[in-house]
Image 1 (cartoon, rainbow, N blue to C red):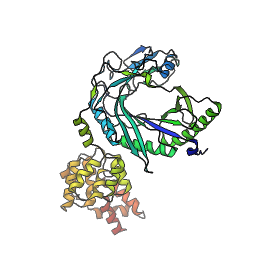
Image 2 (image 1 turned 180 degrees about the vertical axis):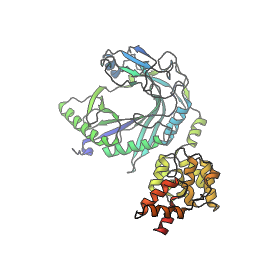
Image 3 (image 1 turned 90 degrees about the vertical axis):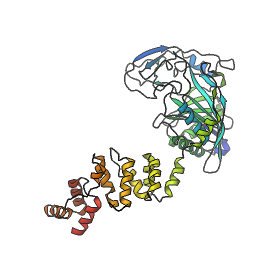
Image 4 (image 1 turned 120 degrees about the horizontal axis):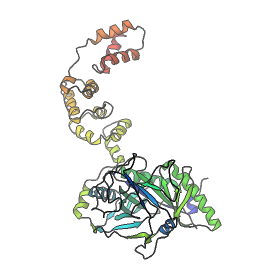
Length: 468
């Protein structure tokens, strides 16, 4: 059902959680997910605590009423920080720098001094019963295609939670869940926008823009490394947070179904602030009441985090380019879209910049870095030498692919560039005589297979044109 979003007064904001590609946030353990058998297990019961406001948070109280007991699987890549038997180490500086770069790209203001906080969580996803989080930046913005600015309210750096073990025949009851400690403590940035998106299309575009900014920085890739939550309300309803978006294609359907649910709630006078889980079919299910500020209190085991002007300037100076900017840069060299896509996908942009600085043959450079590469890859040093020899007319440009194939087979560059002493014309005539009446493509395949990279495809094609 298509809605009139303006009449309904749709207001929406995004919360993005993105894992960073470093070791863990408050210890030196690797950010490595495990599928093998754990080293041992520990058991915990988590209790709610009073937050900084002097009360127990409503969401925390809801979880505590479930009376759950938790089992945690511990691996040899975990330490005492993750089992909550040792205080946190000083914050991971690499993760901090990455988070600051993201803040710059979001046009945020950075706090020079900030307090690491504990956020009470009693659903079992943290062994300690809380998640460490620190507010780094505020009051930024992104701009979508309409020219509209979407406010970035804040950026936080925090620990990821433990993940539930895969259910099996021995899986316990819902009140006795098992968690793995492999994910606990992986650095996350949390980005929250203002409620300034008024259509599903704006929400989707903003999510994709934020994704592009994050992918420009040192973040993890793949399923589960980014989590998107959407906050939605219409006139007369309460704000609802929908968690668990993985596929942007489902956003419009999920938002429309949530609007229908909220319209029904308004009629029935049953609107509440709540957190709901996004389901694959676009519907949602209740998770818990909406949490508030009552679950936050200071982390007393860690000093104040001071971010120097030098660190702010350093991270601002070394900002990565966004993919849209890299696309524009590569287009200036006349490369076709497929080559541009391959350069960026294979992370060859810096190699391209290095080579193009000395060798003004962008199309060949791009092909050598992407299409001509095999495993193991030819080093950039060898590619540079090949390009020099092509420019000096020592070898033809058409030999570049064949030479790179030989190098990947372990043949030294000096040997790889030597011309074969094969009498190609005579060998081609033999093949044609042995197998008369084939197409040029068929003869091409036979000859390429016979010589296995010793002769370039162009040389073979030229001989075939001459003889057929």
